Image (cartoon, rainbow, N blue to C red; front, top):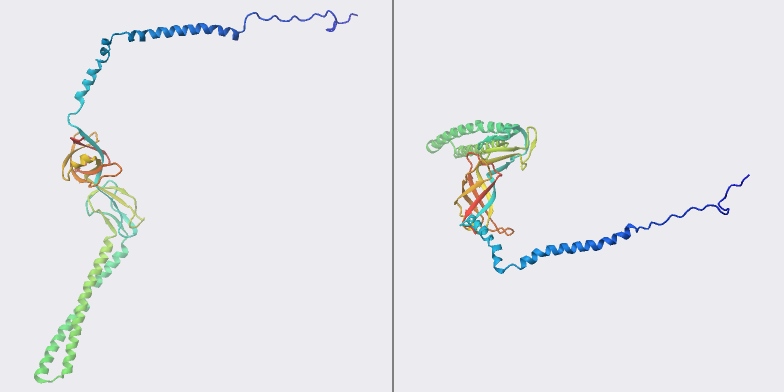
Length: 335
């Protein structure tokens, strides 16, 4: 048998080593591109520099031709400039009267007599509290006041005593049939009866005042509208407790509106109370300016803004203006 050939045996064939690539590596070939790139950049810079050099060699007389067309543009804007200076100030329109109503006394709401959006008149009831106890007290006071039986009997007694005193005086002076003590007793009783009658008359006046007080207490349980306007808020319902100071209803009178704004000190000097001005409201339906009357010009200047508060009243009887919108006041001849 032949023995297998081993790698340790002499003459065992060895693997050939790979030959190295004669071409240079890519990293070695990249530096060769730099000279060409630099030459390209230098040529580009030379091309760009040629227009600047040509412009610098232009004659000096041609320089004004480059700026001359700008003059007509400036002259075209001058007609838009107003001949007389004016100033415009913006403010907010408020209703002349915006009231938050509350009850005079505490109690349970018996009934709400209005609704949101309803236009009411001055003196119209808006809300009523439970007033059953006040009604009973008022009825009791009226009964006491109407009871005049004691006063009538006292007046009758006084009339009788006056007759007895006159007769007793005649008998004492003419016939002497009665004693002086009896006459004085009758006179004292007459004076006492007269004093009682006067006391009863004063008592009736007091009872009448107490009845008026009871009627007033009952009337205070009804909330009435102090002015004419529109109810814009109701925060209480029947059966709820209402106390003085609680905001229950809101009543707005928009028949007259008031523009409140701040103007410069120079503009404030030209405004006087009672003066007429034109107000333009920011409302697409109101294209024409509305007449207004200056109602207030503050005598002091706000330290933070250096502005003066001004108020202008605007007639809104047709209710075209909605309070809360912006309005503009233009004053001519202002710096």
